[in-house]
Length: 387
Image (tube, rainbow, N blue to C red; front, top):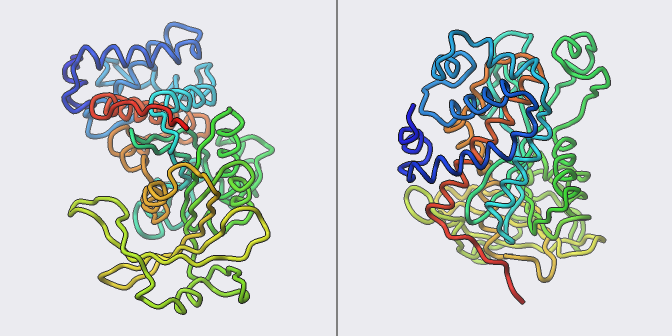
């Protein structure tokens, strides 16, 4: 495929020379992670394949697209070649933070499921997945997404290892998992990813996630200790404490008159602004900051959604950030749908854990590149806030 074709397929009409320059710059950033020329060349071809308009992206289709006689080289890159996917993951994070920097950015944590056949693919089991909207043979992963006004991209990933795997050391070993692999609920890898992000010296004002994470007190404590604010979706059965006592979220919301809601937009959709009625209820928490229950009512159906909100005085982008993260809290994670559709995040056909971590890291790299190219074409850089 020619450079012009890459630019049209991946950059939606971006100037080909600028596209090529930006791509070579990115590949130069990760080149040191591949000490030999052969894997360095092949990873370049694989990422280009992920950026292409191939209808299906896997080792077979990308190898054929790159002019290779078999998928053996691509499979070797993912399974046996010597390189550290976690170091490339860190490169992706630094690239995203550098090129999509926004002092009012939101850090979003959420999960996605990939439907897979058989029983040997690492971490697969029968479980509900939103991808299919039903119980399927699938595996799940948790992602951390950096979402700002210039764009959004995943900056970390962790595979969810179900208890059905961790209780079988031989099965874990055969799939490339460490012998010390133990079961952890999804909020635990989410907390690890937040920790890695903050340990790298980065800061964001707001964190967001769906009710899997909003219902976990340990996950909430991580941003409380090290970030300014968060909005986390909560179940209707979540118990919250006010000055009048402890209530279920839905019981507390029922006490709020409809006229008390404020009409606000949660952002634009296909048909324009998505308006909801919002109500805020103060909570009584011993920890610092303003703890509130945020109730969202659909103006057409009356359906309610609940969010736990922590705000602190002087937090960056308070009102705007709240509306940006609402979509993520509602279940549509910025970054992942595009990562799947444009960069083959879920199209891998790999069974072992090392191959999975390498594939998704390179897919994150490809999607981050698309996000940066789009931002540079359509949105000016955001200057640092003053004062």
